[in-house]
Image (cartoon, rainbow, N blue to C red; front, side, top):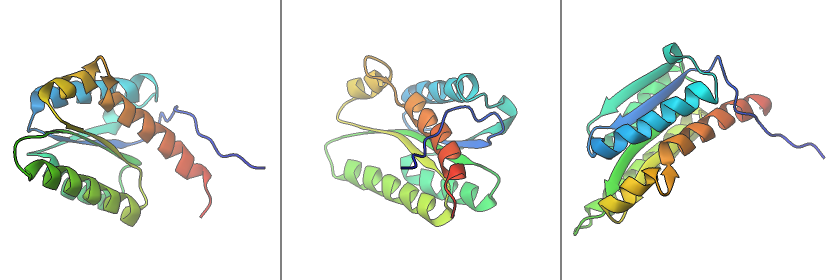
Length: 156
C-alpha cells in the first residue's frame, strides 16, 4: 500500500492571501495567524507572501481566480468573515464565496483554502479569530502548506 502524506515545510512556496476588508477587525487577526503560520511553520519568506485586499467576501473568488490564472502562486488562502444577520444576505454571500473558491481550485488546479468565517454572531467570529476556538487563519495556512506539498507528490 502506498500512502501519500505531506509535511508543512515549503520554504520556496509562493502564497497569495485574499482578505476581505469588511469585518476587518476580525479579519486582521485571521491574517496575522495565517502569515505567522506560513513563515514560522512553513518557512515561507515574507517576499513570497502576497496579500490582496478586496471589499468583502463575495469579491474574494474573483481575486482568487485572477491570482490562480497568473500561475505565479502555489496556493491561495481566502480570509474573511460573514456574520448572520436578519436577512437572507448571509446565505447568499457565504454560499457564493465558497462555491466560487471551489470552482477556482478545480479549474486552475491550485490549492485554495477556505479561511472565511461563517458565524451566527460577532462573538463566534471573535472566538474563531484567535481566542477560545483557535485561529481559522492559522488553520487555513496549515492546510495550504500541506496541500502545496501533497499536490506536488501526486503524479498526473
